[in-house]
Image (cartoon, rainbow, N blue to C red; front, side, top):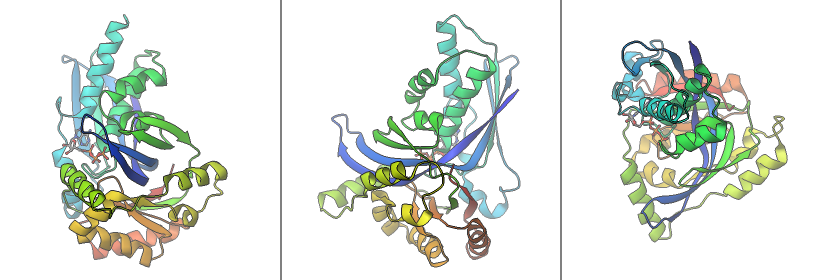
Length: 312
Ligand code: ATP
């Protein structure tokens, strides 16, 4: 049995820079992992090639936040990206003459689903890494990323982890020094954001010249200059936070803006929505303040899922 932590990501910047001939949007984003994670347990299976079970961590899955976690939407069959990841790596192993036995995957979900935190992609990444280790397949990280990108553009980032500039549809990655250790507060309201609608609103705003583009290059320079020794403050990073989707989705769902504003009013150095939402995050200088704000906001917003932890 092997247990892998599958970490959630946030977008410190997220910019849509163009459209490809196939209709996909081109992105530029500094993606950052946080210590909020699912557990992915890989074990020998029994009669079926792949068995997948999904559990929601009971402590966090209180009645209050069950609606925000959306774990009831997570499938246990081939619709689950973690299941498809297992199929792909077992196929690749077979092709290389390294057939493995049957696999049992247990997912302990903590990351809210459909939140803009790559919950599914990170589970898929952990399945690829986990099966590779469990069956000692010897696939390199590059090979795992090659398999991963066929499942989703964010999967290679989730395999490599840390901090990266992601371009193209998200799959072209440049690793960056991580500002790890910065305290983060995450909030996920019980709102469903349609990704298709988010892109169409963003296109509209862009066509009208209303879209503000974040300074991704500025953040990349700051991270490179600061190194991985913890010298970059939450305040410095917060000067560069920006996400085009926040402009349009924040207008559509005022609760998203309220959560961001409230985090900053209560002492976050900066706050923003992640991905196309609806989760938001605040960066703090001080973990005890992030914890205090989490406790206060949990009381004020009973249907919202909150988590305080660190960037990793
Ligand atoms: P991203 O930030 O990459 O857009 P997300 O956080 O918005 O991801 P996911 O949590 O990956 O979205 O969930 C999107 C949908 O995928 C859900 O509605 C769910 O039904 C489905 N899904 C499939 N596999 C998983 C999984 N392992 N965990 C969560 N959702 C999954």
